[in-house]
Amino acid sequence: SHLRSDAEDRQSGHAHGHEEEEEETFSFGGDSDLSNLSLVWKWAPLGNPRARNFTFQSEYFYRDEDGEIAFANDVGEAMLPYDGSQKGLYAQGVYQFMPRWRTGLRYDKLWSDNDLAVVGNTSGEGDDELLEESGLIGEHDPWRWSWMVDYSHSEFSRLRLQFVRDHSQSDAENQFLLQYIHTLGAHGAHKY
Image (cartoon, rainbow, N blue to C red; front, side):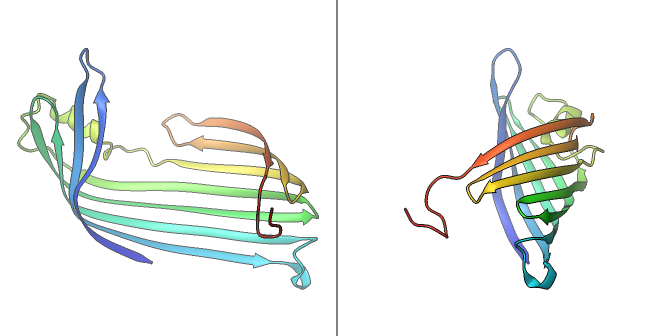
């Protein structure tokens, strides 16, 4: 699928951590194109998914933007001409190897290539500080992979053990999760 938009004044903002809090905003105006491709493939022996089955899912997106970012604070403003592209994907496979038991593996990745400069800066902020605060520059391309195994006691409950290797920040971290998921209320099979 593809989405094309002409953005005007798409804002983001945050309070800046100086002695007195200043309100700072970044707003984007320009062209934004987003393309997306999704894939789902399912397999079950003899067409019966109750005992064993496998599902593969993947999605890829690409966004291309061209325009200007306006920065404003209590002191003044700055303009940042912007040409950027971002892309990302995930791919996951989940295998039910026996009734009620599943295992799965997932990989996520993001990339960006953004050109940004500062012109007409009357904000009192340094050019390098503005570029950093915009969140649109940097050499880090985050990624993450995870493995899980879960057991479904019934259609209403599931116990899951998961390991995640997360490199979304500059330092990677390992996460171990133990989840209990319980569903209450009406759903497709029953009405309450």
